[in-house]
Length: 265
Image 1 (cartoon, one colour):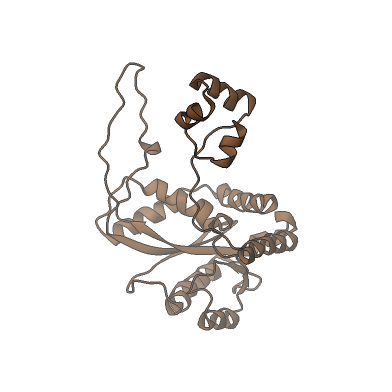
Image 2 (image 1 turned 120 degrees about the horizontal axis):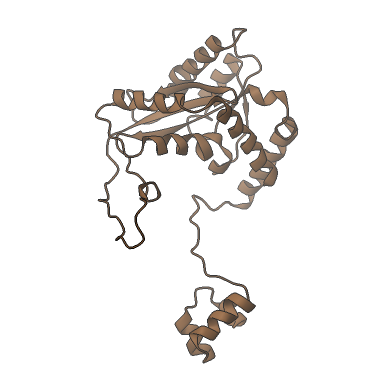
């Protein structure tokens, strides 16, 4: 039995019955009681990492854990993290969000499946462990460019930080963003250098190690699911309301969880 499932992990019960001449009940006992195996669906992942990309992940968590004392350093409060994401005028609720309590003998509830809307707007959102900093919409162009990212987006973020800090300026801040095409060109690097904003590394194809991707964006989108927005202005109001409703302590918890994840890698 073990040889059969080792050679072909996709083998079916019918094929096992044919190959072993055992009953399905006996096969079930052998598989689950004696061999302690179960059949699972493969989990889809966004990208299969090559060796160099895996090394980049290792280097990243080593740098972060050492530099910030496994997340216990006060310098964690100086990390500014951000990224871009699409927010839709209508994003349907997930099946999990549509669950209803029903009586034991009642038929399962049904719901019409709606498609995600064509209308959408790109938003760049930045925050620190102390809380939200700024959200900037992509207004007049369709793609994020280095020009927009530096002269409009980061400029607004820097202004927002200036207004929140006791001492003006961004000295000591460390920008954490991924390696998107608008984040890495010479124009962006020159802007950051001239602004005095230093950066932290980030490994490629590692959304699970980016606070925006593993926490903030899913949370905000879940809050907006099932709601319809006729205009970008309506969407903006709902987005900022969702951000404001996040308790202050949860921004800090996000960073704590980030370093916990890094330590487990």
